[in-house]
Length: 441
Image (cartoon, rainbow, N blue to C red):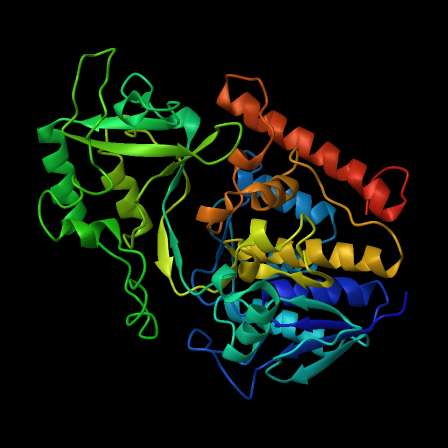
């Protein structure tokens, strides 16, 4: 199939997608507003710009991030290879010289014979082209309007207000208990009860905790529709106790205890390996979230799979608007990649560009699209995005909670099995993608 390929946005996802397809021999049109325009978050004219931390998280294969990188390496990820080439010492983390990394990606893009660069603010879709939209968290108004026409304005969001997600196995179940309010309905919420002393200690630490400094372009609208828990708490000592920590109708029958306040946790996936802290959207720094939220009974040793965030971030309601291959349900010629699709993190954005590229390549070869299954991080991530609750969808990053469970109580052994299963699964998929006999690149 000979179709025009348009990739809109030369960030991490767009560049990975463009290089992968160009390496397959396809002619690619890559559009970006640089250097005629710059978003408020950009500082360099180079592509694939890393604007915050220069860390791409842990490289240790006993972590979800490390397993994820191993999967992407096996799949032939180009930007990850460039990241390793521009690595700086950071212990077990993969940290990069951000300027050298972006310069290397830009050089590869500009000198690839199959990539045609266009400096343009795109605001429409060519009907006969395959388009990958990878415009990032600060998508321009023109592209936002084009997407609104496709998916509906109510399914395109302009801020990211996400509560923390906690690993279920790290919750102390001797303190937390399942119950329905007033015993009505099924006990779908896990309750972390506080007495008055515990609540007041938590409250005082919450209102005095260090917060993230917002960018100037975020300050006017970031809290319009979603109040951070710490801001709500500043309204009075009982403000959150009459809000998200309301104890009314909750009773611990086993301990014969009526809580003074309750933090409720809601299952985040069907296996109940992840729990969301209900009402805990927050602008606290990540270390402060760990410190303050660990004061909640039952969460003393909580493992945070995702910290809460509140910042300007355009993203689409994935489960409502996209299929499992990251295509618009109403137009399979349009793929969405990067943070716009609801993934969080540098490596996740790169992976989303690779995932779209693999399936665009298969479409051009008249082959069916491919997914990776929840035995892998990349497959589990897209399985989560596809089946997340449409009404409360929020972006997510890679974590072990998105995987199919393994029956192994020892955590170290379970993580090792996750890694081995992931590698084997990716190699099997590579046979399908590449037609190889041994699953290697």
